[in-house]
Image (cartoon, rainbow, N blue to C red):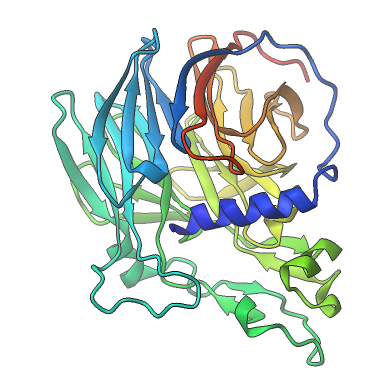
Length: 374
Protein backbone atom coordinates (compact mmCIF):
# COMPACT_ATOMS: atom_id res chain seq x y z
CA UNK A 1 0.00 0.00 0.00
CA UNK A 2 1.47 3.41 -0.90
CA UNK A 3 2.62 5.50 2.02
CA UNK A 4 -0.14 8.11 1.87
CA UNK A 5 -2.80 5.44 1.48
CA UNK A 6 -1.44 3.89 4.68
CA UNK A 7 -1.51 7.30 6.32
CA UNK A 8 -5.12 7.88 5.29
CA UNK A 9 -6.17 4.48 6.61
CA UNK A 10 -4.40 5.04 9.93
CA UNK A 11 -5.78 8.52 10.16
CA UNK A 12 -9.30 7.29 9.57
CA UNK A 13 -8.94 4.94 12.52
CA UNK A 14 -7.52 7.72 14.64
CA UNK A 15 -10.30 10.10 13.74
CA UNK A 16 -12.92 7.52 14.67
CA UNK A 17 -11.35 7.57 18.12
CA UNK A 18 -11.39 11.34 18.18
CA UNK A 19 -14.78 12.00 16.65
CA UNK A 20 -16.17 15.11 18.24
CA UNK A 21 -12.86 16.80 19.10
CA UNK A 22 -12.34 18.66 15.84
CA UNK A 23 -11.51 22.34 16.06
CA UNK A 24 -14.64 24.48 16.37
CA UNK A 25 -15.81 25.98 13.07
CA UNK A 26 -16.35 29.65 12.50
CA UNK A 27 -19.71 31.01 11.44
CA UNK A 28 -21.35 29.04 8.63
CA UNK A 29 -23.24 30.13 5.58
CA UNK A 30 -25.63 28.10 3.45
CA UNK A 31 -24.28 27.19 0.02
CA UNK A 32 -26.58 25.55 -2.54
CA UNK A 33 -26.96 21.80 -2.43
CA UNK A 34 -24.19 20.06 -4.39
CA UNK A 35 -25.08 18.29 -7.63
CA UNK A 36 -23.76 14.76 -8.09
CA UNK A 37 -22.85 13.92 -11.68
CA UNK A 38 -20.66 10.82 -11.36
CA UNK A 39 -20.83 7.95 -8.88
CA UNK A 40 -19.26 4.54 -8.30
CA UNK A 41 -15.70 5.86 -8.30
CA UNK A 42 -12.88 3.95 -6.62
CA UNK A 43 -10.85 6.12 -4.22
CA UNK A 44 -11.17 9.38 -6.21
CA UNK A 45 -8.36 11.13 -4.36
CA UNK A 46 -7.45 13.80 -6.91
CA UNK A 47 -9.31 15.93 -9.42
CA UNK A 48 -8.65 18.45 -12.19
CA UNK A 49 -11.24 20.46 -14.13
CA UNK A 50 -10.88 22.33 -17.43
CA UNK A 51 -12.63 25.58 -18.34
CA UNK A 52 -15.27 23.70 -20.38
CA UNK A 53 -16.30 21.62 -17.36
CA UNK A 54 -14.43 18.44 -18.25
CA UNK A 55 -13.18 16.67 -15.13
CA UNK A 56 -10.24 14.30 -14.73
CA UNK A 57 -10.41 12.03 -11.70
CA UNK A 58 -7.83 9.58 -10.41
CA UNK A 59 -9.35 6.33 -9.20
CA UNK A 60 -6.20 5.98 -7.21
CA UNK A 61 -6.25 2.48 -5.76
CA UNK A 62 -7.62 1.04 -9.01
CA UNK A 63 -4.76 2.52 -11.02
CA UNK A 64 -7.12 4.35 -13.39
CA UNK A 65 -7.41 7.91 -14.71
CA UNK A 66 -10.99 8.76 -15.68
CA UNK A 67 -12.38 11.58 -17.81
CA UNK A 68 -15.87 12.86 -16.99
CA UNK A 69 -17.59 15.34 -19.31
CA UNK A 70 -19.90 18.05 -18.00
CA UNK A 71 -22.93 15.79 -18.51
CA UNK A 72 -21.39 13.02 -16.41
CA UNK A 73 -20.33 10.68 -19.23
CA UNK A 74 -17.27 8.71 -18.10
CA UNK A 75 -14.36 7.21 -19.99
CA UNK A 76 -11.19 5.65 -18.60
CA UNK A 77 -8.28 7.20 -20.50
CA UNK A 78 -5.33 5.58 -18.74
CA UNK A 79 -4.82 2.46 -16.64
CA UNK A 80 -1.79 0.93 -14.97
CA UNK A 81 -2.41 -2.42 -13.31
CA UNK A 82 -0.82 -2.68 -9.88
CA UNK A 83 -0.02 1.03 -9.70
CA UNK A 84 -1.53 3.96 -7.87
CA UNK A 85 -2.62 6.87 -10.08
CA UNK A 86 -2.54 10.18 -8.22
CA UNK A 87 -2.13 13.92 -8.43
CA UNK A 88 -3.86 14.82 -11.68
CA UNK A 89 -3.66 18.38 -13.04
CA UNK A 90 -4.33 20.07 -16.38
CA UNK A 91 -2.59 22.88 -18.23
CA UNK A 92 -0.79 23.78 -21.44
CA UNK A 93 -3.02 21.35 -23.32
CA UNK A 94 -1.76 18.42 -21.27
CA UNK A 95 -2.98 16.16 -18.47
CA UNK A 96 -0.33 15.47 -15.84
CA UNK A 97 -0.48 12.76 -13.19
CA UNK A 98 1.65 10.53 -10.98
CA UNK A 99 2.01 6.78 -11.41
CA UNK A 100 3.38 5.16 -8.26
CA UNK A 101 4.58 1.60 -7.80
CA UNK A 102 5.79 0.78 -4.32
CA UNK A 103 6.44 -2.72 -2.92
CA UNK A 104 3.94 -3.32 -0.13
CA UNK A 105 4.69 -6.52 1.82
CA UNK A 106 2.21 -7.66 4.41
CA UNK A 107 2.91 -6.39 7.95
CA UNK A 108 5.72 -8.45 9.46
CA UNK A 109 6.65 -10.06 6.15
CA UNK A 110 10.13 -9.84 4.69
CA UNK A 111 10.49 -7.73 1.52
CA UNK A 112 10.57 -9.76 -1.68
CA UNK A 113 14.11 -9.55 -3.09
CA UNK A 114 12.72 -10.32 -6.54
CA UNK A 115 10.18 -7.49 -6.49
CA UNK A 116 10.74 -4.79 -9.11
CA UNK A 117 12.28 -1.56 -7.82
CA UNK A 118 9.84 1.15 -6.74
CA UNK A 119 9.05 3.98 -9.13
CA UNK A 120 7.27 7.32 -8.77
CA UNK A 121 6.68 8.56 -12.29
CA UNK A 122 5.41 11.97 -13.33
CA UNK A 123 3.46 11.31 -16.52
CA UNK A 124 2.08 13.77 -19.06
CA UNK A 125 -0.61 13.03 -21.66
CA UNK A 126 -1.08 15.18 -24.76
CA UNK A 127 -4.28 15.88 -26.68
CA UNK A 128 -3.80 12.73 -28.77
CA UNK A 129 -3.55 10.53 -25.68
CA UNK A 130 0.17 9.94 -25.98
CA UNK A 131 1.86 9.61 -22.59
CA UNK A 132 5.48 10.40 -21.82
CA UNK A 133 7.43 10.24 -18.57
CA UNK A 134 8.87 13.52 -17.32
CA UNK A 135 10.69 12.13 -14.29
CA UNK A 136 11.03 9.25 -11.85
CA UNK A 137 10.93 10.95 -8.47
CA UNK A 138 11.89 7.77 -6.64
CA UNK A 139 15.21 7.79 -8.48
CA UNK A 140 15.56 11.48 -7.63
CA UNK A 141 14.78 10.75 -3.98
CA UNK A 142 17.44 8.06 -3.78
CA UNK A 143 20.06 10.56 -4.91
CA UNK A 144 18.83 13.67 -3.10
CA UNK A 145 16.45 12.85 -0.18
CA UNK A 146 15.44 16.49 0.51
CA UNK A 147 14.53 15.95 4.19
CA UNK A 148 17.54 13.75 5.03
CA UNK A 149 18.72 16.18 7.72
CA UNK A 150 15.29 16.83 9.25
CA UNK A 151 14.55 15.14 12.59
CA UNK A 152 11.09 13.73 13.33
CA UNK A 153 9.64 12.04 16.41
CA UNK A 154 9.82 12.74 20.15
CA UNK A 155 13.09 14.51 20.80
CA UNK A 156 12.57 14.86 24.57
CA UNK A 157 11.46 11.29 25.37
CA UNK A 158 12.68 10.26 28.85
CA UNK A 159 15.06 7.30 28.88
CA UNK A 160 12.63 5.49 31.17
CA UNK A 161 9.84 5.68 28.56
CA UNK A 162 10.22 2.65 26.32
CA UNK A 163 8.55 2.74 22.92
CA UNK A 164 7.44 -0.67 21.53
CA UNK A 165 9.70 -1.74 18.64
CA UNK A 166 6.75 -2.11 16.28
CA UNK A 167 6.16 1.65 16.50
CA UNK A 168 9.65 2.36 15.20
CA UNK A 169 12.36 4.59 16.68
CA UNK A 170 11.43 7.52 18.92
CA UNK A 171 13.34 9.87 16.59
CA UNK A 172 14.51 9.52 13.01
CA UNK A 173 15.56 11.61 10.04
CA UNK A 174 13.90 11.72 6.65
CA UNK A 175 14.00 8.32 4.97
CA UNK A 176 14.42 7.56 1.28
CA UNK A 177 10.86 7.32 0.01
CA UNK A 178 8.88 9.13 -2.67
CA UNK A 179 5.14 9.42 -3.14
CA UNK A 180 4.10 12.22 -5.51
CA UNK A 181 0.57 12.91 -4.37
CA UNK A 182 -0.35 16.10 -6.22
CA UNK A 183 0.77 18.09 -9.25
CA UNK A 184 0.18 21.58 -10.62
CA UNK A 185 0.89 22.10 -14.32
CA UNK A 186 2.34 25.54 -15.02
CA UNK A 187 2.02 27.59 -18.21
CA UNK A 188 4.69 26.15 -20.49
CA UNK A 189 4.29 22.62 -19.17
CA UNK A 190 6.61 22.57 -16.17
CA UNK A 191 5.12 20.73 -13.21
CA UNK A 192 5.13 21.45 -9.49
CA UNK A 193 4.85 18.29 -7.37
CA UNK A 194 3.79 17.82 -3.77
CA UNK A 195 5.73 14.72 -2.73
CA UNK A 196 3.98 13.40 0.37
CA UNK A 197 6.75 10.98 1.33
CA UNK A 198 9.67 13.30 0.57
CA UNK A 199 7.95 16.10 2.54
CA UNK A 200 8.99 18.40 -0.28
CA UNK A 201 7.71 20.55 -3.10
CA UNK A 202 9.57 19.78 -6.33
CA UNK A 203 9.71 21.31 -9.80
CA UNK A 204 9.83 18.97 -12.79
CA UNK A 205 10.78 20.42 -16.17
CA UNK A 206 8.54 19.88 -19.18
CA UNK A 207 11.73 19.06 -21.09
CA UNK A 208 12.80 16.19 -18.86
CA UNK A 209 15.62 17.91 -17.02
CA UNK A 210 16.51 16.87 -13.49
CA UNK A 211 13.86 17.85 -10.90
CA UNK A 212 14.63 20.66 -8.48
CA UNK A 213 13.71 21.03 -4.82
CA UNK A 214 11.68 24.19 -4.30
CA UNK A 215 10.92 23.76 -0.61
CA UNK A 216 11.05 21.27 2.25
CA UNK A 217 8.18 21.76 4.68
CA UNK A 218 9.12 21.90 8.37
CA UNK A 219 8.04 19.29 10.94
CA UNK A 220 4.71 19.91 12.62
CA UNK A 221 4.56 20.02 16.41
CA UNK A 222 1.78 17.73 17.60
CA UNK A 223 0.93 16.83 21.18
CA UNK A 224 0.51 13.08 21.67
CA UNK A 225 -3.10 12.62 22.83
CA UNK A 226 -4.32 10.11 25.45
CA UNK A 227 -6.20 8.24 22.71
CA UNK A 228 -2.85 7.29 21.15
CA UNK A 229 -2.45 4.69 23.91
CA UNK A 230 -5.11 2.63 22.12
CA UNK A 231 -2.72 2.49 19.14
CA UNK A 232 0.17 1.13 21.23
CA UNK A 233 1.83 4.37 22.34
CA UNK A 234 3.07 4.08 25.96
CA UNK A 235 1.27 6.22 28.54
CA UNK A 236 4.54 7.89 29.50
CA UNK A 237 4.61 9.53 26.05
CA UNK A 238 1.16 11.11 26.33
CA UNK A 239 1.38 14.89 26.42
CA UNK A 240 4.84 15.02 24.87
CA UNK A 241 5.50 16.93 21.67
CA UNK A 242 5.92 14.85 18.55
CA UNK A 243 7.63 16.39 15.52
CA UNK A 244 5.43 14.97 12.79
CA UNK A 245 6.28 14.73 9.12
CA UNK A 246 4.39 17.53 7.32
CA UNK A 247 3.18 15.35 4.37
CA UNK A 248 2.20 17.82 1.62
CA UNK A 249 -1.00 16.61 -0.04
CA UNK A 250 -1.83 19.20 -2.70
CA UNK A 251 -0.32 22.13 -4.57
CA UNK A 252 -2.08 24.81 -6.61
CA UNK A 253 -0.91 27.91 -8.47
CA UNK A 254 -2.83 30.94 -7.27
CA UNK A 255 -3.77 33.87 -9.50
CA UNK A 256 -1.19 35.90 -7.55
CA UNK A 257 1.57 33.67 -8.94
CA UNK A 258 2.22 31.98 -5.59
CA UNK A 259 1.96 28.28 -4.80
CA UNK A 260 -0.52 27.08 -2.18
CA UNK A 261 0.01 23.75 -0.44
CA UNK A 262 -1.99 21.62 2.00
CA UNK A 263 -0.30 19.54 4.67
CA UNK A 264 -1.70 16.49 6.49
CA UNK A 265 0.92 15.65 9.13
CA UNK A 266 1.91 12.07 9.90
CA UNK A 267 1.26 10.36 13.24
CA UNK A 268 0.16 11.66 15.64
CA UNK A 269 -0.72 14.79 13.70
CA UNK A 270 -3.52 13.07 11.81
CA UNK A 271 -5.28 12.45 15.14
CA UNK A 272 -6.09 16.12 15.60
CA UNK A 273 -6.61 19.40 13.79
CA UNK A 274 -2.98 19.80 12.71
CA UNK A 275 -3.49 20.21 8.97
CA UNK A 276 -2.39 23.49 7.43
CA UNK A 277 -2.14 25.62 4.31
CA UNK A 278 1.17 27.08 3.15
CA UNK A 279 2.09 29.74 0.62
CA UNK A 280 5.37 29.15 -1.24
CA UNK A 281 7.21 31.49 -3.59
CA UNK A 282 7.80 29.45 -6.79
CA UNK A 283 11.07 31.27 -7.52
CA UNK A 284 12.75 31.45 -4.12
CA UNK A 285 11.04 28.63 -2.22
CA UNK A 286 10.28 31.00 0.65
CA UNK A 287 7.35 29.60 2.60
CA UNK A 288 4.81 30.97 5.05
CA UNK A 289 1.99 29.24 6.87
CA UNK A 290 -1.33 30.78 5.85
CA UNK A 291 -3.60 28.89 8.26
CA UNK A 292 -3.73 25.79 10.44
CA UNK A 293 -6.22 23.75 12.44
CA UNK A 294 -7.63 21.53 9.67
CA UNK A 295 -8.81 17.93 10.21
CA UNK A 296 -7.19 16.03 7.37
CA UNK A 297 -6.33 18.74 4.82
CA UNK A 298 -6.06 16.58 1.70
CA UNK A 299 -6.66 19.11 -1.08
CA UNK A 300 -7.28 22.76 -1.86
CA UNK A 301 -8.60 25.06 -4.57
CA UNK A 302 -7.91 28.76 -5.06
CA UNK A 303 -10.58 31.05 -6.52
CA UNK A 304 -9.48 33.93 -8.80
CA UNK A 305 -10.18 36.50 -6.07
CA UNK A 306 -8.00 34.65 -3.55
CA UNK A 307 -10.42 32.60 -1.44
CA UNK A 308 -8.92 29.20 -0.59
CA UNK A 309 -11.15 26.12 -0.29
CA UNK A 310 -9.79 23.20 1.75
CA UNK A 311 -11.15 19.65 1.82
CA UNK A 312 -11.04 18.29 5.38
CA UNK A 313 -11.38 14.57 4.75
CA UNK A 314 -11.60 13.70 8.46
CA UNK A 315 -13.53 16.81 9.44
CA UNK A 316 -16.44 16.02 7.14
CA UNK A 317 -16.45 19.42 5.48
CA UNK A 318 -14.98 21.78 2.94
CA UNK A 319 -13.69 24.94 4.60
CA UNK A 320 -12.92 28.29 3.03
CA UNK A 321 -10.26 30.83 3.90
CA UNK A 322 -11.45 34.25 2.74
CA UNK A 323 -8.74 36.20 0.98
CA UNK A 324 -6.23 37.60 3.47
CA UNK A 325 -7.70 35.66 6.41
CA UNK A 326 -6.05 32.98 8.53
CA UNK A 327 -9.38 31.85 9.99
CA UNK A 328 -11.29 29.17 8.12
CA UNK A 329 -15.06 29.04 7.83
CA UNK A 330 -17.19 26.04 7.00
CA UNK A 331 -18.30 26.27 3.38
CA UNK A 332 -19.96 22.88 2.98
CA UNK A 333 -20.57 19.99 5.36
CA UNK A 334 -20.20 16.72 3.49
CA UNK A 335 -18.88 13.25 4.30
CA UNK A 336 -15.40 12.37 3.05
CA UNK A 337 -14.40 15.33 0.87
CA UNK A 338 -11.19 14.13 -0.79
CA UNK A 339 -10.38 16.75 -3.43
CA UNK A 340 -11.63 20.15 -4.60
CA UNK A 341 -11.19 22.32 -7.70
CA UNK A 342 -12.62 25.74 -8.53
CA UNK A 343 -13.69 26.42 -12.11
CA UNK A 344 -15.96 29.09 -13.63
CA UNK A 345 -18.03 29.86 -10.54
CA UNK A 346 -18.33 26.29 -9.34
CA UNK A 347 -16.50 24.21 -6.77
CA UNK A 348 -16.00 20.66 -7.97
CA UNK A 349 -15.27 17.99 -5.37
CA UNK A 350 -14.87 14.27 -4.95
CA UNK A 351 -15.97 12.29 -1.93
CA UNK A 352 -14.42 9.10 -0.58
CA UNK A 353 -15.56 7.00 2.37
CA UNK A 354 -12.45 5.40 3.88
CA UNK A 355 -14.53 3.10 6.09
CA UNK A 356 -16.71 1.52 3.37
CA UNK A 357 -16.13 -0.70 0.37
CA UNK A 358 -14.37 0.65 -2.70
CA UNK A 359 -16.50 2.02 -5.51
CA UNK A 360 -18.53 4.43 -3.37
CA UNK A 361 -16.76 7.63 -4.42
CA UNK A 362 -18.57 10.43 -6.21
CA UNK A 363 -17.94 13.61 -8.21
CA UNK A 364 -20.03 16.65 -7.34
CA UNK A 365 -20.20 20.38 -7.99
CA UNK A 366 -21.65 23.30 -6.07
CA UNK A 367 -22.01 27.00 -6.81
CA UNK A 368 -19.14 29.14 -5.48
CA UNK A 369 -19.28 32.24 -7.64
CA UNK A 370 -18.76 35.03 -5.11
CA UNK A 371 -16.05 35.92 -2.59
CA UNK A 372 -16.72 34.86 1.00
CA UNK A 373 -16.76 37.76 3.44
CA UNK A 374 -14.17 37.77 6.18
